[in-house]
Structure formats: structure tokens, C-alpha cells
Length: 440
Image (cartoon, rainbow, N blue to C red; front, top):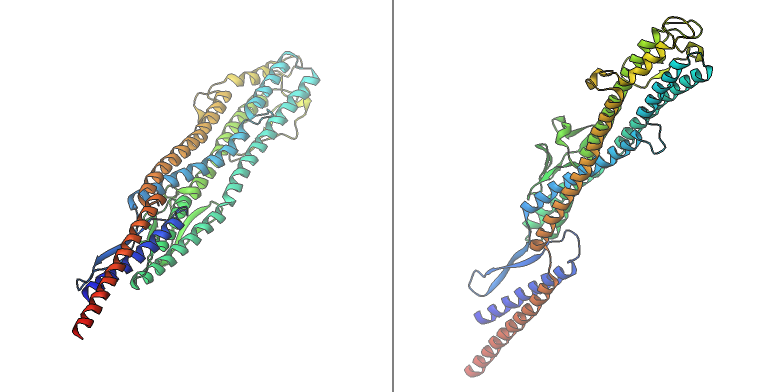
């Protein structure tokens, strides 16, 4: 009877191994599937072996590193997408950038200083001032449009993250139930790992082998409970809705696509602020010199631009026409010295105090160059993080992935074990039959 029990246990073990190997082959190309193996332990009464469960291959440390690199890649990809859209506004393909239009205005004043009574040049000065003012509105509104459009997409991203968080909590519940019943919960853990990877790519959150997820040290999933991310206010802040009340996350704690989008919006709004500070400061300097001069009609004290109280786009003074352009410094029609003074502002250092001793043109170049570094840095970092994640993924696959050739070889081995166990059972049966016949 002991020999028969040993053979039967071998049959059961071989059948479980064959089923698992077949499942491995069937799922070899399924993303996120991890190799499964049958765990055998000696039977308690010494009669063969028994199946204690199915073990899933895993590499928790590698998974955490892959998720971190993927989150970094997603963060920088989102940052690049937002800032790259803004960068095109700084240097439009059709020309007409702020720096070029401002220089054109200075050039018109230089021409006017030589021919202060020329009505055509005076009209050109007005047109150049109008174009510069219009460009300030277009650039500001365009940058704000990029920021608003990007921020509008956050709601959908937050919804995706919350849905994944709820699914992780539900899978934790299912895994606990299957584990307690002795079933195979490996496929459920595969699903959970995929969801945690999705959450990491969206938010930069971290997960552990128990299925708990946290962001900035604050729980998002704890056992079978999940807590939602909440997008609040026009400033696009993120909070976690905990039982004790929502906790706002600092922007630096949020990674992934959501964090990159938030960072991109912040960068674009900051860019618009810097541009407006430069434009407003330069326009104020022009206004100061212009107001001290006299127009062809003898008027004085006129500002060329209207400037908002807080940094923002300017507008040309609606009361200014060709005759009110203050070319003269002495109220004499033939004097163009005031126009010359305005023209020389193009080379004045410190015209915008926020940019040190730079001229307006140099300050604009600094703004463009600094923002270009943000865009390039985001793109480079995204590529590097993605490459690192892929390298680690390849390493993890060598541990948790399925080799079809190896599984086919194991199937032959398990079939031989099945046949051998069957022969043991047959031999035991023959022995029993022989003993019965002998005793009769």
C-alpha cells in the first residue's frame, strides 16, 4: 500500500507540474506574466510527496527600481511635452518674436531721430510699438493657453490613478481569500504588480510585496483600503483623501506623468511671468524717456504704453498717434534727440532690474536659453530613465520570464516522471494481486 501511495503521489505531482508548464508556455508572451513552478514537499506519513502550492517567480527589488525609473521617465516625458509646446511660442517659425519686435521698435526710433518730422517714419514707429504690444499679449495668452490645456488633462490622469488604486485594494482582498483557501494566487499578484507599475508611472508612488502603496510617505493603498487622489483648485494641487481629512501633497513629492505635467505647468507660468517682467520693465523705461519729450503737435508727458500694475501684457496708449510720438527733447519739430535717447535704450544695461546688468536683448536671450535647458534636460532625462528601466526589465525577465525551450524540456521530464509513477502503481497492484492469489 505504501508503494502504491508513493506512485499515486508521483502521478499527482507530475500532473500538477505538466499543467503548470503548459500554463507557462501559454502565457509566455503575456505582459506581466511571471514564471510559475510547483512546490513539492515530503508527504507527512512518508508516502511520497504532495503539492504544497504554486510559486510565482519574483524580483521585488528589481520591480521597485524599474517602477522608479519608469516614473522618472514618465515625469520627464510629460515635462518635455508641456515645455516643448511653450518653447515654440518663444521663437515662432514665422518670425515676430518679442526680442526682434522690440529691436525693430528701437530701430524705428533711431530712424525718427534723423528725420523727426517725417510722418511716414512716425507712423512706422506707432506700428512698431503696436506690434510689440500685440506680441506681448499673444505670447502671454499663448503660454497661459499651454498651461491651461495641460492642467485640464490632469483630471483624467488622476481618475486613472484612482481607478488603479481601487483595483489594487480589491486584488489584495482576492489574494488574501485565495491564499487562505490554498489556491494559486500568482496570476492575481501579476495583475497587482502591473497596476502598481501603472500607478508609479502616473504618480511616482511606491508599492511593496504586500500590495501596499504610498506616495510621499502617505498611504494610497493599505491592505484592502484605498484612498483617492483629489485635484483641487485652479492651481492644480493634489491631495490624498484620508479618513481623517485630506492631506495636500507638496509638488516635489508627486512624480510620474501627473507630477511632470504639474511641473511643466509651473515652468510655463513662470516663463510667462519672467517675459512680462522684462516687457513691463523695458516698456516703463521707454515710457519714462518718451514722457520727457515733445511730439510734433507740441504735446508732452505722454506714455507710449499702458502697463498693468502686476506683471502682464502691455498695450499701446490709445491716445498716441504719429503726431504725439515724442521725438524732440526741446519742443522743436526739427529736434530728434529724444527719439535718439529712446533708441539708445536698446543697449542700456540693467533696463530690467530683475535681470541684472543685462540689456533687454541679453535678458531675452537668457530667458530663452534657460527655458531651452529645461526642455532639453527633460527630454534627455526621460530617455536615460527609459533606457535604465528597459535594461532592468530585461534583467528581471531573465529571472521571472518564461523560456519556452526550458518548459518544453521540463514537459518531457514530467511525462517521464508520470510514466514512472504509473509503473510504480502498476507494480504495486501486481504485487497485491500476487499476494492475494498466493494466500488463497
